[in-house]
Length: 220
Image (cartoon, helix red, strand yellow):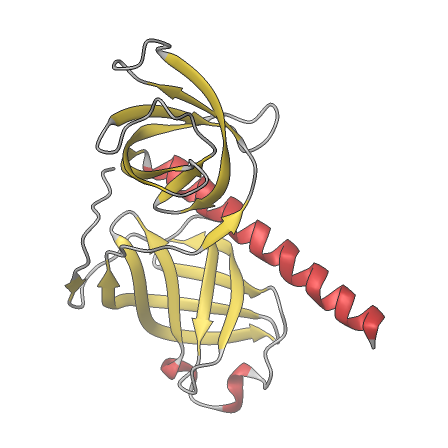
């Protein structure tokens, strides 16, 4: 899998469906977005479970008007198809077809400090141990080091959890900020690694949202 840094839109067509436990979003015609997760991947569709209860029941309007959004190796997919409500918080999407695929320049970022091993041929150090300041589906913001130059291409090995397989890929240093952080944009990353990274980011967002709800509840 290679990731580009330009934006593009594609028309309707066949799509690569997300895997079990991947994060997806159900979008209603009103614009309401409901966070969900793939419960099962079927030959021609998906079973999708809601993670948070919708403001109004999903069957309050035509189910076929619901749009399913998810990240694929080609970008952010918006898809529609035949929708069946199996339970209040479980839906089956079948005969899915894309109505839009956007190869995104920007992804949602989350603050997260994770170890990263950076391998570069131009640095006298060769192998550099650093850590992330934030993460996105399109790249990393590294704490350093100052030996990395803008435009330099490096290999990286990102650790999301102790004992878990590392996420490996190739990226280019695209900028530095006033704190000396290096922004690394992905050039190459395996599709499976990208899915694991996006899932990790989604879990971070969900945990942050839950903390906010708990703090709001205590404050009330």
